[in-house]
Length: 250
Image (tube, rainbow, N blue to C red):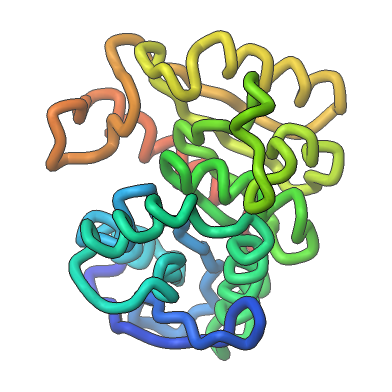
């Protein structure tokens, strides 16, 4: 069901270590109950496109929250704050998982919630969403990975104290069903990395579905960027909402 009316606003909640985290939240107008979705932003940060995605979920009948995972780096434009985060080596995986799980609890505690919450991430956010669903399995009932890079880490030099373990190595703990969307022209993850990720999921007997798009590369949902691919994006969004209708219904 489409909801023409919605409430969208900036909110705050307590994340990792009790830190106050800024977030953007939207929910449909109506009596509910509504499923919930945590939106993990991409490396460019907590930008306008991320907030549009939050509103898109509300329009499609899902209460959504997009935490500002770089909020500890201070005020400024999304580009400036993301640059500070990159210069610092990115946010620690433990912190992201705790912030995402706390966002899921914020949704689940809403009086109009149906008790089911999923997580979706784009680019680096896809990696973060994978981590969150694996390491906080009680928090999430569905996982959507949109071209998450570095789920598989081929070069151990890319691991560090902030990112000590490749997300793929946590997959055994994944309980939520998974939807993965990938472009066959992407290089991170490359088609080979997607194949190897799928092999791990099959080996572990996980519930998943992967969809791959020719003539599409990284970030093909991003309408403001040259790599936007309208047919792939439209089909991908249809698959996202069909998947969530199956996995997040009360």
